[in-house]
View 1: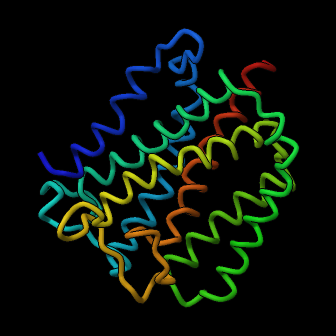
View 2: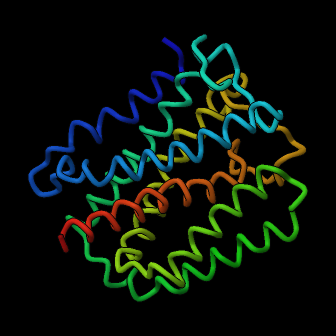
Length: 229
């Protein structure tokens, strides 16, 4: 089995086993969570395939399996199920065990700060494909939240975002070569800003935001509709 596959299995094992914790009862979230993960998966599989085709990034055959669809190894497809599932699990645990009172009061500042970061990235690095597309998607999702959805869950989202960066960076660190002679996923130096957190392109922290906020936004919208029906 490939290194990438083992990484996905390890990332899913804990959250899946703990999904039946009585207080969190994460399994009860599944009917509204998986539609959000599916929409998220379709969007990012399309950009992933396009980026692979155009050389924005690629996959090291030493660390992935031979089965591919739309130029993407099977492990990469699983990434868009496993990582959102594990990330939303963190969000659910925080909602079950922690108060968001401090975070809720600061939501507007976090929203505007990251909107500003995205605008700066787009304006100054529009010639970098990964940076431009990544920051544009994050900007759209944040603008939707700030000016339309105005979700009361955003305090918990921001808490979960900063907490989930720890495991997210561990997984991404492995994928970008922090513990291997060469990276599992390699990026074209022409399509990223070039600033890295150890081996991880700085843009991935913004990608992590979109990959968490988009499915949460859909999930919470569906939860409200179901509760009102």
